[in-house]
Image (cartoon, rainbow, N blue to C red):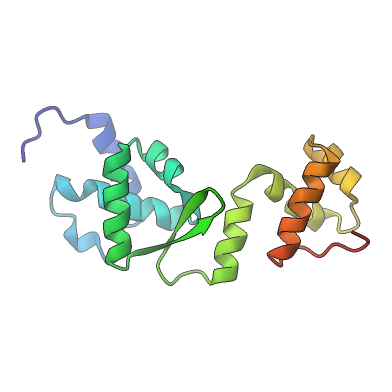
Length: 160
């Protein structure tokens, strides 16, 4: 494989993210540029657990097919694992997070649920109206997310 036509900024991005996963067991495979993408993906997933496919692809500036290929391969090798989360598939370093932690990270990667959890940690007595005002969303939106967060075991709603 030659270096003709290689996007150097893409390669630099890959190397930067690969450095994040430098302690990973796959680093030994990083002997040539063909391993830049899987090393970068592994490093990124390690540093950003719960990231979904599009986030991995976009942040690493990779192509869709390239990202799919390497994610499948890394998952098949047991380096990463994934779980369905609504419309997303979220990726995690293998064996690092319990099922509950993976679910929690999935919710915390979304703006409204994350804002609700943070607000409730600051003020456990906050009402749905308080949360809606603080987050700039409607009360039904807060109610919908509160029900999902409660179902996941992340919050407990007293008085509905």
